[in-house]
Amino acid sequence: MRQKTAFIPTLRTVAEAEMLSHQLLLRAGYIRQLAAGVYNFLPLGQRVLQKVTEIVREEMNRIGAQELLLPALNPAELWQETGRFENYGPELVKLQDRHGRDFILGPTHEETITDLVRGEINTYKKLPLTLYQIQTKFRDERRPRSGLLRGREFLMKDSYSFHADRESLDQTYEDHYQAYVRIFTRLGLNFRAVEADAGAIGGKGTHEFMALADSGEDTIAICEACDYAANIEMAEVVAEVTEKQEDVPKFEKVPTPGHGTIEEVSTFLSLPKEQFIKNLLFEIDGEPVLVLVRGDHEVNEVKVKNLFEADRCELASEETVRRVSGAPAGFVGPVGLQQKVKIIADFAVQGMNDTVVGANEVDAHLLHVQPGRDFEVDQYADIRLIQEGDVCPRCGGVIRFERGIEVGHVFKLGTRYSQAMKAHFLDAQGKEQPFVMGCYGIGVSRLVAAIAEQHSDESGLIWPSQVAPFAVHLIAVNMKNNDQARVAEELYEKLRHEGIEVLFDDRLERAGVKFKDADLIGIPVRIIVGSKAKEGTVEIKLRRTGESSQIPAEDVLKELPSWLAKADR
Ligand code: ATP
Ligand code: MG
Image 1: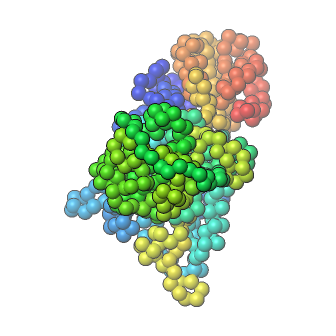
Image 2: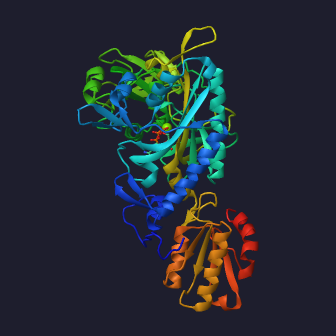
C-alpha cells in the first residue's frame, strides 16, 4: 500500500486517552472514537483485527468447532425464558421494533444458540457439537473509557458446546483451554490462565485468560513457587492455625468517641489491627447477615455470595444497620445485637483470642471478646480476600499480585440454560435429557489493545509479526531524489511480487516526519532507502531492537526472511 494515498491519519498528541494502548492506537491512526466505547477501525486497525481474527478462527477450526453467524438483534422472549431480560442488568441494550415488540442487542449468545440447537438436535448421536462465531457484541458498559479494552460495541469470538454428559464437556473444555493457550501464544502475549468466578453466567469450573499488564483492571494472585494463579475474587485462603486461650478476661466496654474505622480505633486504643474483628452487615437475597473477618483482612463478597448461592449480595443500608445493631456502621459487633441475625465468620476469626469489636452502641467498643465464648458463629468459611504474602493454597509458597487484562474466558455451564429453555435430547436409553453445555469467549477487539499494551514503547507500537498490519515498512527518505525514488519503487514492486505485505512511504514529507510515523505505526521490519541509494545500498532495521544493517538493494529479498524471523525477539 502506498502511504501517499493511504488513510493513515497520525496525530502527534491525543488528550482524552488514559491507557497507553488507547493513546497509541489513536495517534498511529488505527482507530477513531465515534461515541464513548464505540470505535471506527481505520485501515491499519482493520488489518490487525483481521489477523487476530484469523488466528482465532484457525485454532477454533483445529479443535473441530464449526463457525456460524448468529444475529445481533434478538427477540426479548428468548431472554425472558432464562430470566436474563430482567436480570442481566443495565449493560443489556434493549430496543423496540415498529410494532412495539421488545428486542435486545446480544451481549453474549447462550439463549440464541440454545434456541437454535433445541430446534434441530434431538439425539445423543449428534453430540458433542461445538459451534462458534466471531461477531459484534453490545454491552452498555458503565465506564467505557479504556478504548478497545472496554467497548460498548466490540468484537467477540464466542463458542458454545453441547454434550450428552459431563465427561464429554470436560474434554471440549480442555480442547478450548489448549486452543486458547495456542492463540495467545501465537499473538505474542504474556498471559496466565487463572481460576475464576463464574459470575452471573453461572456454572462451575471456569478459567480466565489474563494478558499481564500493569494497567490491567483485574488483579490476579500468583504463586511464586508453583503455577497456581487465580483471580483474587476466587483465590482460596489457607487459614493459619492458632491456639485458643482459656484465660481471656471478661469483656468490657470502652469509649471510642468518634472513632469508627478499625484504622482509627486501633490507633486510639493502641492495639494492633489483627486483634480487631471487622463486622460488616450484608443483605444477602434481602436477608441481613453479619459477616466477620480479622481486622487486617478484607471481606471477599464473591465468596460470601457463593457461600449462600445467592443472586444478590450487598452491604446493608445505613437504615438496616441501625435497626439490626442499634448503632451506626463502625460500631457494629456480634455481641448484643438488637435483632438476631445469622453470623458468618472467616476461618481466621475462629482462632482469634481476646478481640476488639464494636459495642452496638455509638462511640463504644468491647475489649476482651472471645469468639465462641461471648458470641456464637453460625458458620466459619473462607470468605476473605487473599493478600500478598499469604500462603499458596496449592504448595505453601508465597502469593504475589499481578495485574491483567481478561482476554478470554472458558466456562462449564452445565444444564443451566438447557433446563431453563427446555433444550432436550434423547439419550441412548431413549430418555429425555437436557444438553450439558459449555461456553467460551475471546475478546477479539480487546486483544488488539492488549497486544498494543504489551508491545509498545514511548515512540509507538511494536507489533508482533503475526498480527502486524504489514510485514515491511519501505521508506524512501527523499522522494524528490531520483535515485532514491527509483530504488524504492523497484523494491516496492519486487516485494509485492513476492507476496510480502508492504507499506511504502512514498510521501513528500520530511525524513523526521516519516521516521516518527514509522515508529508510531510499529511495523516490525523497516527498509530505508536514503542517500546511499545511488550506490545501490539500503538500510534494513528492526523496530523492536533497533538492530540495523546496510545491505545491497538487490540482496533485500534474500536477506529479508532472516530479519523477519528475528523481528519478534
Ligand atoms: P469483563 O470482566 O472484562 O467485563 P466479562 O467477564 O464481562 O469481561 P465475558 O462475558 O466473559 O466478559 O466475555 C468474553 C470476553 O469478551 C472477555 O473475556 C473479554 O475478553 C471480552 N469482553 C467482555 N466485555 C468486553 C467489552 N466491554 N469490550 C471489549 N471486550 C470485552
Ligand atoms: Mg468474565
